[in-house]
Every structure is written in C-alpha cells, then in structure tokens.
Length: 273
Image (cartoon, rainbow, N blue to C red; front, side, top):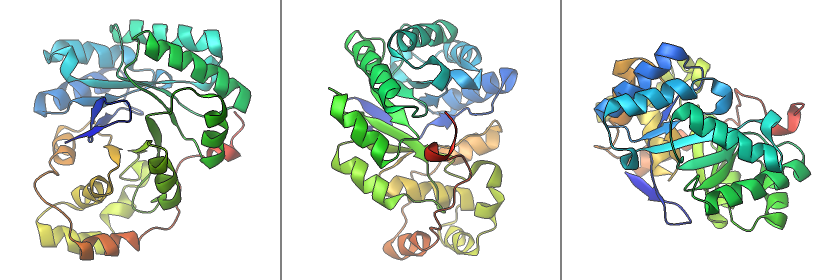
C-alpha cells in the first residue's frame, strides 16, 4: 500500500521505525524488515543508528530505488547552513546519495525553523531528498511556517495512536495537503495499554488478528502513514501483515471512542528546545 504525497512521490503506508534501536539490533531489524517485504525505513540523526541502517540497506540486496528512507534534522543542527551540513553528514553515515524524506525533527523558534526549512527546500530542489516535511509540529508551528515556506511540507510526523487520535490536527493537515505520519502507533513503551484493551481484544477475535494488528489497521483506515517499531522478527512481520482485512464501521466507531488525548512523549510546546 502506497500513498501519493502532494509532490507526486509515493510513500509506503507502513514503515519500520528505528527509535531506540541501536547498533546490531538496528542492523538486524532493518535487514529482516527488508527481507520480509518492508520498503519504508525511518531513522533520525539523534537515534545514533544511521550507519547501521545504511549498512542493512546495502546488505539487503534490495535495489535502492525500491526503498523509501526517512531521516531527520535534530534541534542542535537547525539553521540554514547547519541544516545543509547535517543532511550531508546523515547521507555519509547512511552511505547514500539521497534520502526520500527529510524532516525537521522538532520545532524550535519560528525564525530558526524558517531558516532550516529554507535549507530543506533547497536540498529538495538539488535532489538530496525527494520530499520534505516536519515532525512534532502543532497548528501554530505549521501556520508560521506557511508564512515563509515556498513548498508545503509533504508530511508531519507526530505521536499518534488509538489513545491520541489527533482528529483536528489530522483534518488541518489534510486541508493543506499534508499527510500525518504516526510514530508510536502502538504506544511505544506503554504497549501493554493497547494489548490489554478489551475493545481491541474483541475486535481482534472477530477478525482473527492480533490486538496490535487491529490498532495498526485502524490508522491505515484513516489514511495515516504508520511507523511501528520493533527489533523482534516475529513482531516485525506481524506489523506488516495487516493488508488482508478491513475494519467495518462498527469497529471504527468503537475504536474512535478510545481516544483520550493521551500523550506518552513530550509536547513540542512544553519542552525547552
């Protein structure tokens, strides 16, 4: 399953997240994911695993043009010139000539974001990235960015799961042609809250799927790109195997009711970047 972004580039709707996957774990997870059919890998400079991700991509034998690769610009590297240097450093670690998506990882000041995004636009025009976007941006961050941006972001990657459904932000982004991309789609370190949920358990039994697969399928039905993270081969495979069933209206409405606005990661407006 692929989604066409606002610049015409297609992105696989399911990707492998690599947050907290370090060294050999990152290498093995990415290599296995590519072997079983993933074609979308998400990393970031701050994850400290770009080198391992790049090696796994190379060793997988999958042609580069078949893989969609995302990395991100960390706060300390923001600024016009610093951003350009940061992507070149990421490309060197990844062993690649370009990435498919480059994101501003977190918003800082409006001015610094504007300068950084100008650099992203130029990197995009120069072919070092096939798409650009942002991560952890709220409404006001996007609105201020629109004042200076010449290219509308293709993606806004945010924390998004059954307990944090972000309906208003999703609607706002879609209105502007921006796709939401969900990190922590299974609530990350709080996954037990997903697995133990009785509503999801009943829907999973109905479809003959796991609870995690139901939670992920819910996001696909909403048109959201998902990045489940795992280093366990069985889980990596299970997370990808969600294309052979659909949730009906009753299922969707039941899961919509689980929305609690519950965040497990920091909010961009409440951290000192």
